[in-house]
Length: 316
Image 1 (cartoon, rainbow, N blue to C red):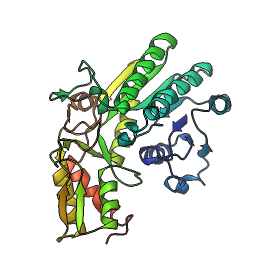
Image 2: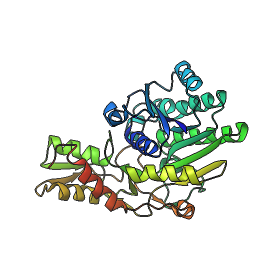
Image 3: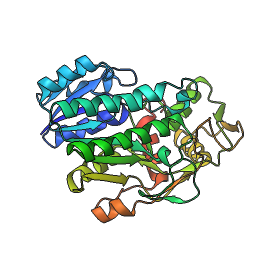
Image 4: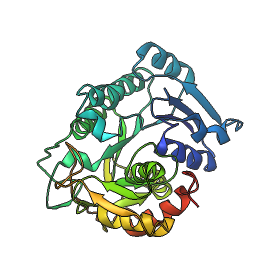
């Protein structure tokens, strides 16, 4: 199948491309390299089934030309500003990178009769809730620009499904960890330790608690849902029903790196930044009924990711 992956040189997109190529698909990767890196996809450049195009999805003329030439059958749309902390400082960032990119892709799909879109969404659309998050839970009250823009994008996908005969797979990610990241808790912690291994600063009080999924398990889940969910619009939480506290992540990191003398210093407050949801828990019953289940708990995912990441950051 001819597949377009937007944001394909990024953290999750590059792992998804690895899987799609392994499954035998012909993949075109589009990325403007704002967050994506050529090093993430360099190992695929000699594969005849793979094409990289440096392109900003906000450039509608170039995007239109790409769709006209590409004759794609499915779009995996992963372009986004995935660093939520940045959006409070620039209120247009998520509007442009999360919502307008989605609208541009949907319009190009409509013009060139591409009917299938797999969309990377997020738990942030639900906002702050004490309830276990199910796919059909409401009301949806996001507290970050990131969550609001993703929710708007989901709504537009729903409209295109109902008006133009599209099929949509909306996959709501938990926190994701693993190699090739450009931000996230382990990335931030390891960067801090590179500068000062005496003290590890942790934003908030450390009691923030969320589910985590290892990136390669995530992309396997995305692929499984795409292949097995048959509705016109398919909404699934991916992840695990386990969670882990930020304080425990810090402890695991220092344990795995054998930094026995490093002190953990908390900045205080119940969240790490403006728009942060300090705690959430996913229901994954729907995707389990479909036939997919993650192999690792949140703690196992974090520990596994640390072991794979530490050499990338120069730790023994």
